[in-house]
Length: 597
Picture 1 (cartoon, one colour):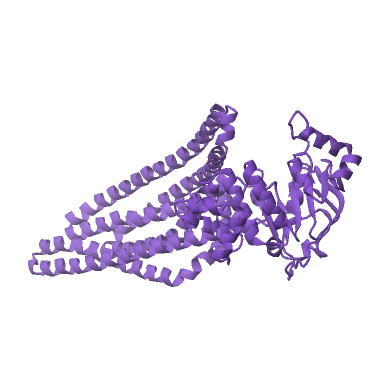
Picture 2: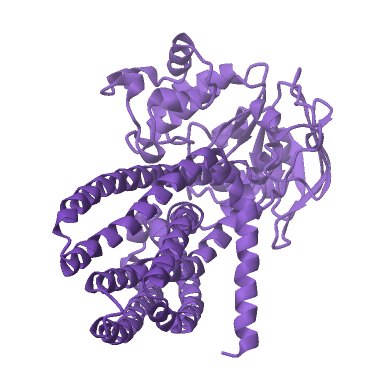
């Protein structure tokens, strides 16, 4: 490596650290008082350590000089200093761990808040396994830089300064002989740090890919088994693991090589000092106790030297983690509230698509110049082949995306001009895949309305026909549902999601075939309740079945090329061949439903 390359790498690392400092200083600043208390404990511990080393060599000098009376006083002094030292180390260790946990908590909470408030499509593109790696492993690595490393830097620099001072105070000549070798340690550090950073970057990247593979595999066990793809998925995991393993082995191999070569340098320096020191003791210019203290200081000097070298090594290895976390903090939402945007008011619930055009990043048109007026209180079925834009329209109404052209208005208010939170407050959505978290039934219901009373919870559950099965659960409303509501059947999850919609009581309702997971008896009961819920509300039904279409006032048929046809079911059956064919296909003898979904 040339000097220019080395300088460039150092400059790059320094610039990365400056960016990292600006980003993470806010997470450290609230605890600065406790940080300085920790520094005080470190100072006391280092000073008492220095005194203890001197006191360990002093008895030998006293014996050599025949001053036996002073031995007891030295031992008593050593005991007192030892107690102070251990108390300071305990306080410092406890405070250091407390500071680290506080930092980790703040960063992880900030990351999750950032992800929650980013535009949904932005987060959806991120691999969940890699996000989990950044939230856990990467945050831990960053805490090593901005909590542990700062405290250890204080400790090591103070220790180094005091020990070097003691070495020169005991024997300046021997100290100079030892200091001559310092450039070797600097060169050693630079060589290993560069390689460590490269290996750490490779490991973090490949480990994120491995976790993403594992998360995807666990989330799709049913599909894997149904397609007899177990061997392929296992093979993919082995390849991902092998890649991460190679980077991890390289990183850890560098750590071992660093330790071994550093220890070798230390022993060479120690051997050089012993040779010169023995000659001085033989010549009478140095007492045995002084030589012992010198060697102890020199030996213990390896602790701060090794620590500072490790800090540089750690910095090179952990800074990529800070950059990966920074990527999340620097990610901007594709949809933002306008400055000073007011909340959406929905006195009636009318919806207008005014020449709306939208396409995804691949450029395929989903909506082209769409103009539709949905009247307050009207029920409209969204029908069309898979990928034609039904769910996209729901996403546009929720403002997960903004249209590239045109406007979407609710009661005359452009959705771009109001806050996103207020839009979602005025809409209730019941998806085919219900939104349930690993919490109690009560907590899941309160996700729809966090100020609901027990009476309101019970009423919503009774109206969605889920009160009976909730009461039968081991702890009723306090029963934990497991991840994504795994403790419930598909129909029970769907009914709980419908209860959330009853509880939210929003003026606009979006139903993604909300009764599709229910048995026929429960479906009939739910359909009646949904009809009551739809009364005086604007309702969009993403329809997958013919029965849902017949219950709507009008139908929006998505052609699949960006165009829309709107009318009653009877009108479209009479005037629109593609729609008629789709309905006949579903209701015909083949039993297929591809035309609608």
